[in-house]
Image (cartoon, rainbow, N blue to C red; front, side, top):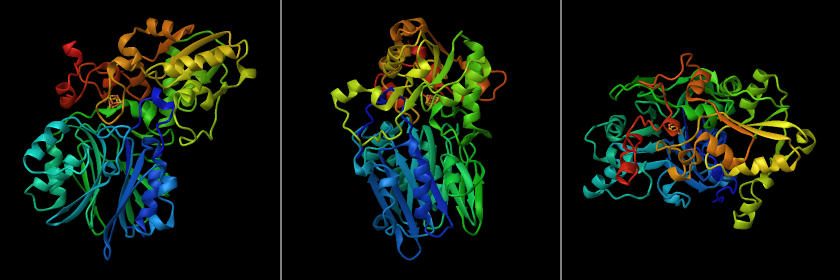
Length: 485
Ligand code: SF4
């Protein structure tokens, strides 16, 4: 298993990526390619389950990158069949940072009417209570993952079919879930009633595809058909194609706004618009809200780049790659020892001195989490001879943890949870620091009137502290909601 990246502990960690294909020869090859395109959503481990009419269900779970694990013939030839699903994981629940192979999805259950495998992206906020209840009633858990609850709830359902059992199970589940599942003949996709995490439908020849993001459809040459709607379940078979239903109580959609800012790949389409375009719009909005006189707009690579392009275009200040990323800094290159951690950012990023010297530099980054990386980057820019350093951040201050499938540090570790904007500026020792406003972010993602404070259009809990689903497990463990402060 690759060690945690020594420099990425100052970013929110993407959740998981899910992918499924029905009706193509050697589905596992397409699933592996899809998971490879979704690798940014989880790098710890991956798994694939397939079904073949003659050889039944088969599965493989591996630690590490898809490109290193699901490319060898010896693994891929164990996964025959025209139907398969897969999952890439960064552990947001279960054995965090110490993943066991038993925690790697997809999970599989054998029911009286046949087998089923599921891959889950998101986080179940009442998993502890469900787990206790299920164990008391005789369930034997194999993993520490919250997602396994879904399989046990399905096992206890009295419904006759697997899709109906899944509906039953998911009605008991609170929080965020996008699920891709399969039976012997069906590919199933579901999004929670608020649609917190993404899921899209694609077409590949006569076959069908479900994926966390559209970038994974592109890699296999599949056509993007549409997003699965919040609260929608699609059951796809070779004979009947896509059958859609809405089995949950209707809720207002609350898609994760941070997918637009950072998690999704810039070449994906979200809400009918390219993620790159949205990030550029965020940069433009930021330039309008927080202008500053300077000589150079410089992105913190790579995730700050589209917003920096937008900032430069709006402000008229030249754009330049003042920081260059070492593309070949693999995660497995070094162990994250204390000494290496102290070298930190310098191993991953280098300053383009000729561009920076004597310039007033605007650094554009997607977010500030702990602030440790921002501080080191600022030092590198000043060491290179910059005259001034101004930070512009393409998201509002991250002051609250996410409980919906994103790994965030404890609240007290978030810089914005304990400091005002001015205190953060002092702490980072920069000439100025400005974050985009929540309203500005909403405008940039396409909501012309900004945030509806009475009924927000997105989940923005990590900025606002207003959680669309009460995080029951965390409250039980002592987390205090905003209203309780
Ligand atoms: S809390 Fe933040 S990261 Fe989590 S789902 Fe909501 S917007 Fe996304």
